[in-house]
Length: 123
Length: 108
Image (tube, rainbow over all chains, first blue to last red; front, side, top):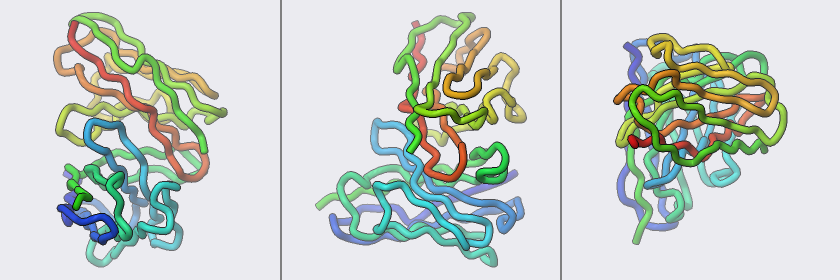
């Protein structure tokens, strides 16, 4: 069974940094693009970032552009999200999600999700 | 960026009811529309992709339709386990892949 396990969340002060990880197993990680999605407490889902299979191309939500960086290590079956200059409004549960399909060429959807890791930005 | 608007934001229904949730895109997205179900404290679960394709393992009482800008998710006969929040999401062209604001389905 496909597994995605996020880690690295916690309490951080405004302006601080945090690095989230997502460990993937039971599928060929290097063959799938990946995404980060977040959910603020009591709010809806917000897509955050996308990375291609090789890491050669990335996209970001305007709300995090220039502050967050997505990366992956296919040898370690791992996805990362480096979060800098954190703000109170970045407080959320962060999910990694596997993307299936080909962006801009076929239906594309998030078929597997991790359980999420909570990031709290507060002084 | 493409905006996704769901209606209603909340809905009360009874077991056995037929329920329809609507999602509208701010521009045509062909059939690049997905639906997810989320229960409290859990990760979202994919129900429908490409507007009407049922994800493996999802009960057939769930169905999706639409194209262009207007889409619907229908649950033909509500079961107790269906009470949850539902989100639409577009996957047209390149990211950002915006979600709708969600529809909370509650027990009447």
